[in-house]
Length: 206
Image 1 (spheres, rainbow, N blue to C red):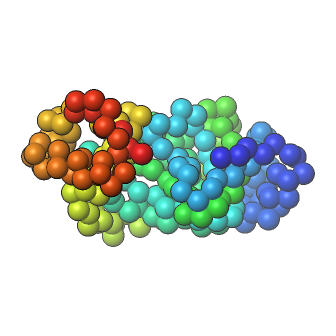
Image 2: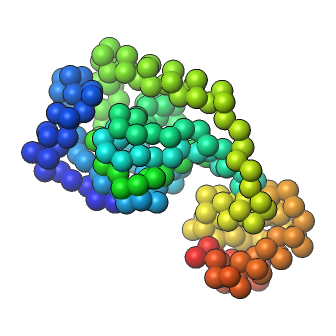
Image 3: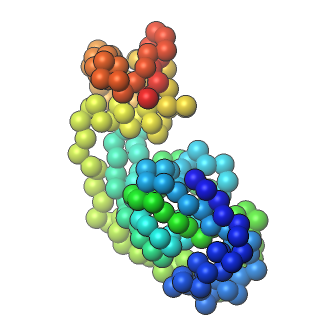
C-alpha cells in the first residue's frame, strides 16, 4: 500500500472521476492510495475508517462467516465506493475488500469529516445510489462452495488473530468439523508448506 499526497496528482485523479462535480465542492483532505493485487483494501482489522473511491483497477468484496465460509458480495471497478456504510454504522466485523488487480483509490478519513458529509445533500445522494445498488446485488448472493481445507485456510486468514490458530477443539467447533478432521488438514497443510506449527495445537498461516 502506498499513500500519495501530491496535490497535482490528487487533483488530476479527481478531475477524471465521474464524481468530480461533487468532490470539487467538498472541503476535504483527499489523498490517493495505491494497492497491489491481493492486498486488503478494507477489513475489520483496519483501525482507520476510510472512504475510498476506486478510480483505477478492480476489487472483490466478500463476507467471511465464523466457519470460514466465504460469500461473494460484490465486485467493484472505477467509481465503486468503499466505506459508504461506515459513515452511518460501525464497521462490519466480517466484510473484506481485496484488490483484484493493481488499484488506485481517492481516499479520505470518515471520522475527520463525518459531520460535514452528513450535511451535504449532493454527497448523500451519491451514497443513496451506491447503497441501493449494493442492497440489490446482495439479494442474489450465495455461499461460495468450499472444501473443508479451503474453509480452514479462510478461518485462519480472516478469523484468527495474527493468522494463527490456537486450540484445535475450539477451532473445530467453529468450523463444524471434528478435531480429528481439523488436525489431519493442518498436518497436510504443514507438509504442503501452507502453515507452520508453532506449538501444541497452534499453527500459523504462511
